[in-house]
Length: 113
Image (cartoon, rainbow, N blue to C red; front, side, top):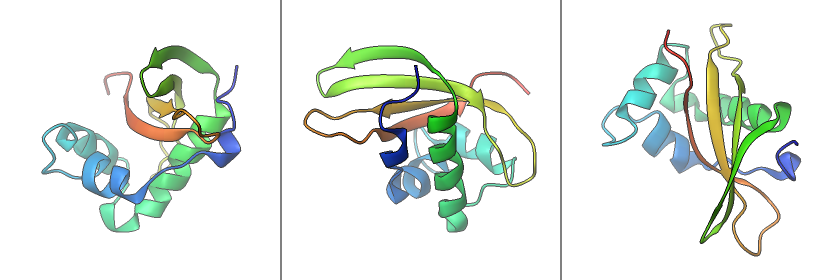
């Protein structure tokens, strides 16, 4: 199964600039170090947004978990990075109740380098 309505998936700027690529974020700092080593940059957040959006629609859903806010979908596969490498990551998307577009919750590596 693919991520439902992946073509409408939302990747918010703050999710990238204030979390995934923020080396000062309490929970995002390790993710920022990971993604930055592959060429992603906070000031070029749209590059990462596009890569994550593509990732969400390209690979099969590996997990589905119901939450009080709506279902969450885990998608695992390779992420095309600015430096050309393809690390294996998981993106997590939530379909908020009453919405038709999945929203990015997080992204993280699934393997050691």
